[in-house]
Image (cartoon, rainbow, N blue to C red):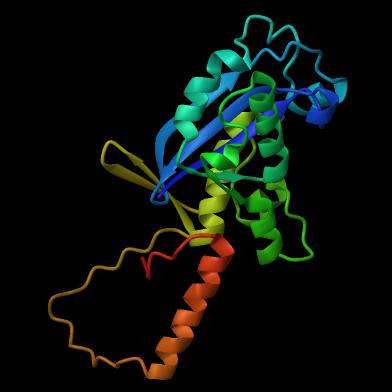
Length: 235
């Protein structure tokens, strides 16, 4: 399964008021492993950035003066995300802005949902932690993820952090696979490696009862519903 963890930065809060995307950051996850592939682009919005937005992400009008426009990068962006499941925190915000950019350009693709499925990690977090704060910073604290470099919002940095949060929230650890080698990050405990001695006594095998198997299947179904994807034990 190919997933793209995505975040955007914008000139303001509402595309209906003419606000535009100024940064896109994407991180690729395949079969729950970070591949190291990413997409990152700053974009010239052809409008002023709200002062409040600059205070959040630190991106200035002057910085974007020589950056490409959305129409210049849209083909590469669509190629990178097509066919994947987009994993986004507060997805309606980012999806709304992306669809607005498609509408402005008059592209054949009017909605990102036509080429991708979308998983909203904010909705997932609210289901898993009802009544608690579920901002990205709050989730980092809850799952013991280091976000000390996040002095200001940035699309690529936030996508990388969200990838860690999502994988730990739905599975317990983050795996990074690069060139066939695997680096694993543990969130709450050090990795425990057990080496079995050859002269250990044989242990009895106790088969699960029918009731236990049925209870286990129901629990896997609950995990699948919460994560939005089939569990590895059933796939």
